[in-house]
Amino acid sequence: MPMSRPHYGWWGYVKDIIRRYPALCAQEAALRETCISPNLSGMPHGSGAPSDPVADAALRELPEVNRRELNAVCRPLPRRRRLTPAKSA
Image (cartoon, rainbow, N blue to C red; front, side):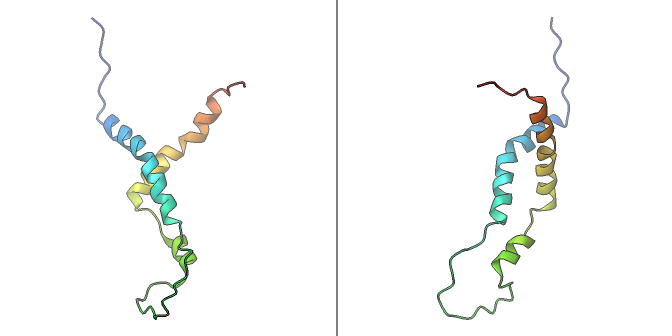
């Protein structure tokens, strides 16, 4: 009878992080987007928020947990690409 693979408690968490990688990349990209449409209403904005959309986009970040999960997947990717042999065309 063949032996089954051992079940590790962390494996489900790792698979979940890998599955969420595309969504985390999209969230990070959305944080860096700025509004390029000018405000044409002419009304003052006394909200106290930064008035510079570029500076605001530069200061936004993913929550720390999401940032760590994204980095956990991003860090090994360059090494994996070096290990994968190039296909000849």
